[in-house]
Image 1 (cartoon, rainbow, N blue to C red):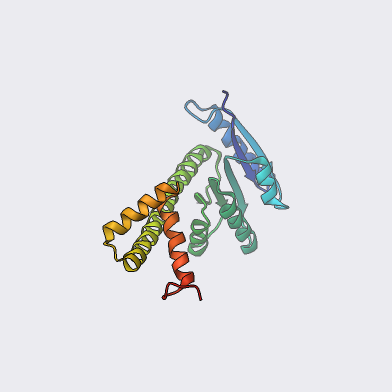
Image 2: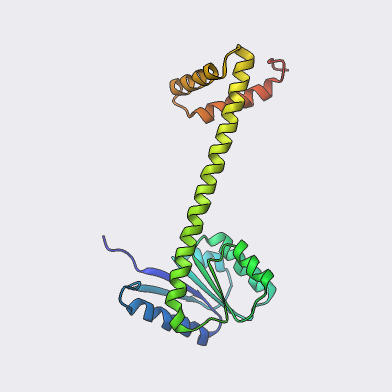
Length: 208
C-alpha cells in the first residue's frame, strides 16, 4: 500500500513569506533522509478556517502571522486547540504572556523572528516530535485519571456491599467480580451502576 505524501498546510496572508516556507519545504522534501514527497496546501485568509482545515486534513500546520493582532492570535490558538495537529507558529515579535498562551493552546513550536527557509526542516522535525511527545503524555495522563476514577468507584461499590451484606472487603470484591463476569460487564461499569442505585435509594436502602 502506497503511503500518502505528508500533507502540510501553510496559513499565511503574505505571499512572500509563504514562498519562503514553501521553498524550505521543497528543500526538506529533496534532502536525503528527509520527508520525501510533500503535499503543500496554502490558505491565504482565515475565512471559515476550521472547515477548510478539516477538508484538507493536514498532517502538519504552519501558521505565519508576521505581526498579529490579539484577535488573530486568539483565533489561531483556537485552531490549535481544535485541530489537534502538529502546529508551528511563526511570529516576528512576541512576549512571555503570548508564548504561554501558545503553549496552553497546544502549539507545538512557537518561533519568534525565525522565518528562514534553511530552518524549515529542523522546525518541522521539532514540531512533529513535540506534538507526538505531548500527545503521548496526554494519553498517559488520561489513562491514569481513568484508572483512578475506576478504582474510586470500585472502592465505593465495595463499601456499599460491605455495609449492606456484612461482607469483608475481599468478599465484596469477589462478589463484584463474579457478578461482572456473569453479566459480561466491566467491574467499573457494574460498580458505577451499584453506586448510582445506592444514591437513588438513599441511606435507608428503600426508594422514597
